[in-house]
Length: 75
Image (cartoon, rainbow, N blue to C red; front, side, top):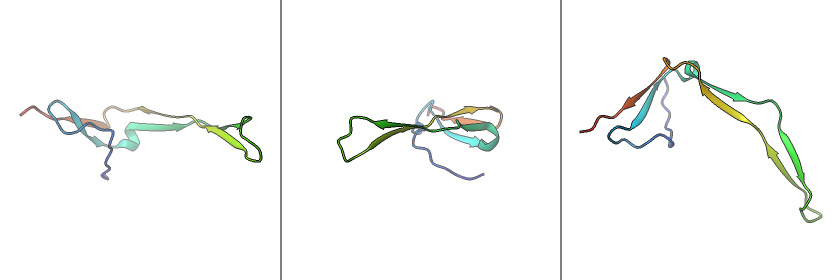
């Protein structure tokens, strides 16, 4: 398995689940919704044109047996 650092995981401390190990391809799915929304900004000063874009994505744990979290014990 590869190693990746995620700054969103908690720091190592008592009772923290700071390390995740497993097969993330099997255990977690990322979904990109088809289509991007583009909206032209009607208030941008001429000769400039502004656009707002949005794209929806999501993710979900699909197999909890594929990923395990290490809970740090209190010293």
